[in-house]
Structure formats: C-alpha cells, structure tokens
View 1 (tube, rainbow, N blue to C red):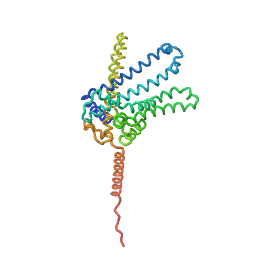
View 2 (cartoon, one colour):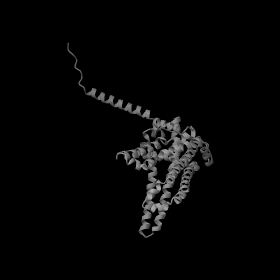
View 3 (cartoon, one colour):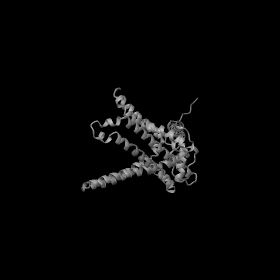
View 4 (cartoon, helix red, strand yellow):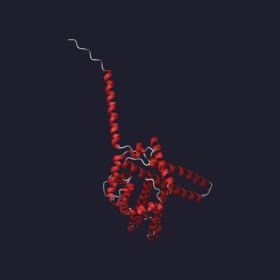
Length: 330
C-alpha cells in the first residue's frame, strides 16, 4: 500500500511538471466541467418547469415524475451530451500532452482545434461509452420488469451492470491518446485499449497506480476543514453560514476533480507512448513508469524463474542432507 501511494505521488508530480509548464492544459478539464454543468442546467431547468417538477418533488407520488417519457429521454440526452463534452476535452488534453512530450508548446486553441479535427472519432466513441455508462441506470429503472423474475435475478443483474460499467471504464483507460494518434473507430479503439491493457499493465493498475487515492486524500482533507468550520458556525447560531460552507465544499470537490483529471490526462499519454514505443517521455524519466507498469509477460517469466530457483535451492538442500553412498565391496 505504501509503495502504491509513493509511486502514485511520483507519477502525479511528473504530470504536474508538464502542467506547470503548460498551464493551458489545466484549463481544458475545467472548461469540460463547466460545459457539462451548462448543458445539464440548460436542459433541466426547462424540463423541470414544463413537467411541474417542483410540485412532483413534494407530492406523494413524486417518483412518477421520473417515469415521464420527456424526463427519462432528457436524462439520456443529457448523459450522452455530457459524455461528448468529457471525451472532447479529454482528447484535447491528450493532444496537448503529446505535443509537449514532442518538445512543442501547444496553446489552448491548438488543443481545441485538434479535438475538433477528430470529431469523426470522438462523437462515435462518446456515444458508445456514454451508453455503456447508462447501463446501471437503465437496469435500475427496470425494477418493474425485474420484480417478476426470481428474487435473486434482479440483484445479480444490477451488480453485473455495475461491474461491466466499471470494467469498461478501466479497460478503456487509454482511449483518449489512441483517438489522438491512431484515430480508430469506436470498437477498434476499445480493442486497442484492451490490448494495451493486457500486454502492458493488466492487473497492475489497481495495485500500483491509483490517482484515485490522491483525489480521495484531497477531497477528505478539504471537506474535513470545511466541515469543521461549518459545525462551528452552526454551534454559534449562524445557520446561513453553513450553506456557504456547503457551497464551498462543492467547489472544493470540483477543483480537486479538475486537478486530478488534468494529471490523469497527462499520465495517460505518457503511458500510451511508453506502451507503444517502449520509450519514457522526458518528464517521466525518473518517475518509475517502467517499474509501475512492467510487461506482464516479463513479470510471468520473472516469477517462473524465481520459482525454478527456489526448487533448485530446495533440491540442493535435500541432496546435501542425504547420507553419502557407501562404497560397495565385491
């Protein structure tokens, strides 16, 4: 665990060095987050008002509001549009990191223009991955159908939908740099990312690199501070200030998420270049990228050699304790 945290911090610092020199890259995930918020608010305020959402939220049958066709269709459209925005700016960030590793100095407009030039692969991939991300919600809203099945079928299908969505997210980790450099179609992008996953890092992902740990540490630390002052304000009779601290908590989580998103985006391109060329980008030379993601075939060969060495050593020990063979007398 300590090795995981240390290695993650080292890789995050290498990514930070790239962002420190090219601050325009840091703006890309922020613009993506802002665009997602604008899309969500812009779509849902009119839907909320047109469908009497305010009344339904306080009514006894408020759950019926979510079953209206215009509501769930709007939810699907929102998710797909947010997916498009997310993929678009992920590709823009990957392009900027790639250019930085090539020794260039990309501007914000260069990155956005490169993403626009790749809309022919970004749009299909965003629709595919956005649909996959909707699976858990779709299954959850099929409860009226699932209740007619044996009692254990519903929970199994629900769990499997979440597992599938998580596996998809993990295996498609390298799709943004693949879209930047190779520009394949959606399923080909996933197959390529899956191939790199199997050949280069595989099961090492969870154990050796976890930017999620850094995100969690940042969020918990910030929320602890905000929570302390919010509790203090509540104790002295300032309930209005509690809402201010609540808003600050949301802003803090957004800031940490944007920062980790930027670090992860740079890291994805570094990992892709290492996986496809065997060369470590300059900013990651001393970050232990090779150690974090050793080739699985090499790892298997190394483990096999260690097991063989142990067997040989054990056999040698056994032979050394055997009584010497007495000479035969004829």
